[in-house]
Image (cartoon, rainbow, N blue to C red; front, side, top):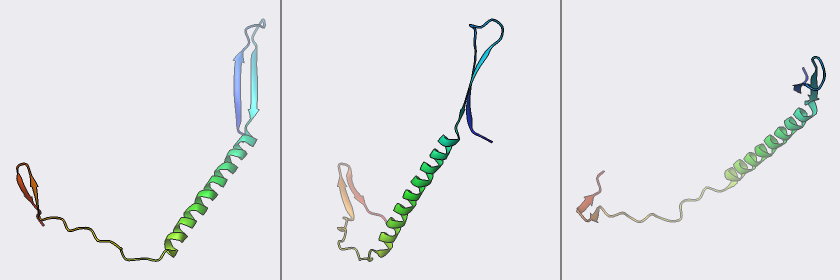
Amino acid sequence: MIPVHLSLNRLREYAGHAIGMVVTDLSEQKRHQAEEIRQAESIHRRLLERALTAQEEEPQRPCAFRLPQLPNRVRTKKGFLSKKF
């Protein structure tokens, strides 16, 4: 099967019945699109592999900072809110 673009048009300028037809072979365009897709997939695959490798090679360090302790009660305009666990 060959991918084509088909265009038909009735020709009114001729006596009788006439149709103009243009058939365009899209095989080369489809091959080009498929190659572009393969290249994009290859680039994305390599980027993902690099990111995963970098993530695996990065040493796991303990967290260097601590979050501040939150107060047990917070004052609002209507009074205090208590932290419930």
